[in-house]
Length: 386
Ligand SMILES: Cc1cc2nc3c(=O)[nH]c(=O)nc-3n(C[C@H](O)[C@H](O)[C@H](O)COP(=O)(O)O)c2cc1C
Image (cartoon, rainbow, N blue to C red):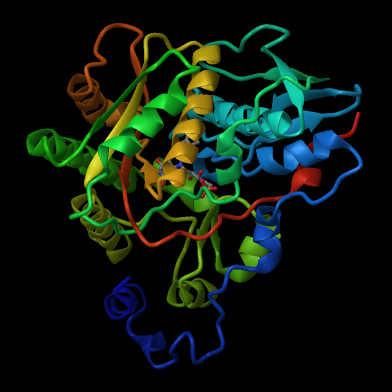
């Protein structure tokens, strides 16, 4: 972030002299917020060990909307936390369902590691309506000891996987063997996995343009940017308190927030630096991106959404094993009306225009300096007492 301009536009230069670092404002991620990334350690209840991996799953906006009931031995009943949804950007909760799937997949991989077969019943009391979630369970999972269950090599990547929002190495395209490993990882799930690299420059350029426009729309739509602001955790104190959401640790922004110069109750205007700088920054990230991947399903029912999430995290784990990083780009896939044009464009570009066909995931992919772990609330925060 260009601090000088940011401060000038938003605050009139007052805190330039203060110098955030000099004023003792730490930008370090609080250790307690990322402690779950050390793994669960020994547990008397095997389910807690397994859940210690499942909670490291990727989740849209890092909302971690997973509630588990452990009241029946050997079973895990998963419900969605209806307080942790994104109604503006994800009006039908498609991404929330995918984020239940990522959790289920890591749970399954961790269970295998301990010689447990999972018997997973999705929506044991019936699936949610297409437009609304309710309190019924997402999955009932029974653990059955079974020495013949194969371990999954992707287990080794669970603690290493992180969403990477950095600048990628444009001159270093993803190699064919890495794409192959990602495609292989999807296999248990019936969906179409596709990718593009620098050998198709027109396709790459078109995808960058759609992603840029969709991002611009999200920034300029007050209710969608405000939804992100609601889960924005600025500075180590907020991050440690919430251990979820979107983390912002830049010391200058932390100071601005403390001084009341970053008002999260107001959407910034189209010409405000907070808007223009984010658009510029995102465009430069897209320009650095040597490849994109996508995952298309033929239907869009609730089980398909959950299974798409399962497939996505497998792809990301397989990529992690190859040193390849990624960042989902959901903006153009989102169903709110302002995104209608990019939404139609990306469906056309990815050959997903037939009724029902749904682009569940689209992500930028490449090589980049490692990203750190995102906060997690820990297993206890997810267990419901009955
Ligand atoms: C369904 C889904 C949609 C996501 N969409 C985006 C996105 O549009 N942009 C983005 O930067 N990250 C996106 N993410 C990544 C999450 O923000 C990320 O998983 C979360 O912040 C936790 O970080 P971690 O993946 O590094 O553990 C998405 C993840 C999932 C599962």
